[in-house]
Length: 243
Image 1: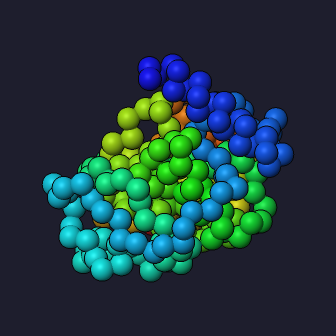
Image 2 (image 1 turned 60 degrees about the vertical axis):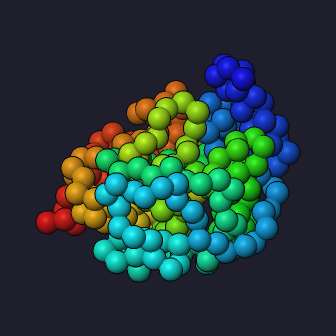
């Protein structure tokens, strides 16, 4: 299947999915293609995600399916078991983090269904026939109260869209549509803290924070959130923390 045909298929399937839950017309069409919440729910099987071969620079994996030793996730990150994540359906592709990329799911969300159910819905969509990815696309997801939830490990490639090569990018995704919603102070603090941890952990430059639209023809992460990237508010917050 050529790239144009696959993109058209993704646009059609995403639009149809959001129409089913009454969200069409609220999200730009290109943003629909990169992420949405379906209504299907996967099997609730906590699992340790496999990695395809050893990572050249990453530490050994810990017993919970997150990075162990120096790479263990921060205490404020809720592990995959918390939202009863299903296991990935394919092996991950290891990568060496080089940048942090900010995203949104692209559909308005007011906290219902619950965060746990919303994450399972997103995962089901991403591993299902519409995307056929290994797992939920993102490494970290942020709820409305600023809670950080673990997606895939940061030492493996994410899958945000068909529009750019995501190797090296650690994806932090806010639940909701930030073309119409405003990120809260708690969410901004959560993104800043997580980005600072990633920058310190993987020795990244302090200006390594980008938005999805910096790399692809999409409105993601939404105008209201991207403004913080563009004005370097997030980078300045990270630099202040690292000092």
